[in-house]
Length: 297
Figure 1 (tube, rainbow, N blue to C red):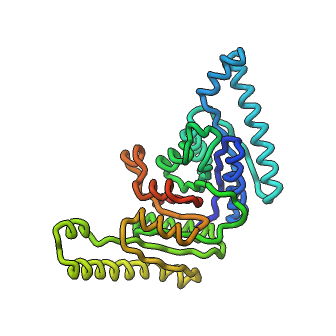
Figure 2: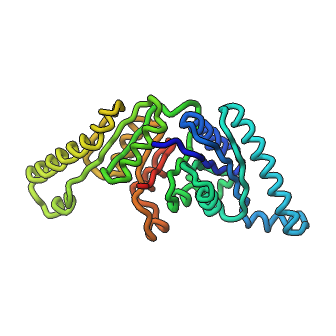
Figure 3: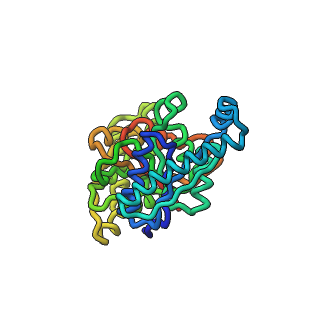
């Protein structure tokens, strides 16, 4: 995979956002990215509120907030650039955060978008940052959601695959960010129409034979997926579980305690803009580690 020319990290300038900023800088350094861009989006609602409170004109209020954001960003960018020996830039936009992030990512053709899993507004973002989820739902670019304090490079990765083209892209990203880490590739399978057959009271021995055939097919497909990469010098651990994908990934995450889960994302559709894929959403909300979601292209 080519080195990303630009990594974009979105920050709300809170203490929690420092996790995403630091992780993005670490990846910019390890991946040899051309530059790291720190972005802050000033929301319009607080801007209107501050205008009333401070008794200033909208233009004056806007300028004060933009100046403060630029100063804070420049300070953080300078510190990260010096600490990690990387090129940094800053950007400020006004509007809805997830839309501003998408627009800036497109404008700079960002190879990776990094956002924090938690933000400053704990009422609006009770569990996972609302902005992070919206970015992930709509984005056609790889998105990394940072939930943990980045104490070191990623050391243990979990890569769930369904053998689609997006799984291949997920493996590309896992290899790009792992740098010698332990990478476990997992497939959670169910035989087609298995639940229907079970409700139809099909005998257990028939179901077991059906499941065994599905497992053999999955193992063969897994070999075909990984053998070319192993031949090129990359090794992987493998896991194969029977059950529902979301539950299986959660079980593996609890057992393995990975630093990062890397998943593929299927092609964008109108429905996906409204509803994040069920498996991805479950993993996002039910695991505590960082998560990178890579689209097919």
